[in-house]
Image (cartoon, one colour):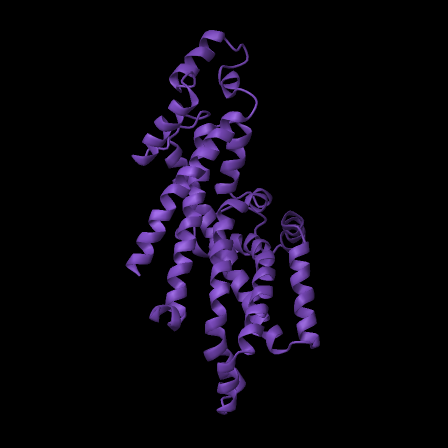
Length: 314
């Protein structure tokens, strides 16, 4: 296990370096100059020159990159061009919000997608299977922003069951936080459940055709025991991969849902930073997102070993 973790960390180092190079280069290639906005309406050339000097924008690009990278290695992601706040502070402020939303969404996806996928595999070729496939297709087809707006109109405006928007920490006001999370978590989890359902169904169909499942049935075990104790454990390996990758994607991909439900999370931070050409914030957010994906892949590898005895033996 320790060898696996060390190997993944060694692979992660050049990956993060390449990500930082691409982000830094592409950010500098964008047209426009953020210092024109920072200098105010009069745009005094001396003020612009002074700002460029403060942020070392007159240095060659590779000098700027390695200076920034040296700060990152020391835990300093720089400061926001717009507000002057530390980038790491902004990330630590917004990241828990998106993690809370992503966790709720992935739980919704697991609760819906995996049971329906198992049921569809067990009832292959029946009306249950076709209905599950139709539900999955609708989940993939409905845009998140449209579903979110419709839920707000129905549940919040007309029925007045749940708050329409906003955020509350689960650790401060748990019940209010759950109420505010239900709709955005369902909106995000609905599409993910469709992915999980289709992959669970495919994995279960493959495992249910294997020799050891036929042997278990021949020994007289009931179908529930065969499916849940023997087949599901081996079918979980590709499902774990997909779930961890989807969670990593949620950390950076919940932008529209956060905008619809006015959730001040990671997605809104990166959108505002891109529009404002806030170099430090964009670079810090993308680098943290890459670290999140790498950690999710490492978690998937560890879960493989815990779930599958054959991998533990290997």
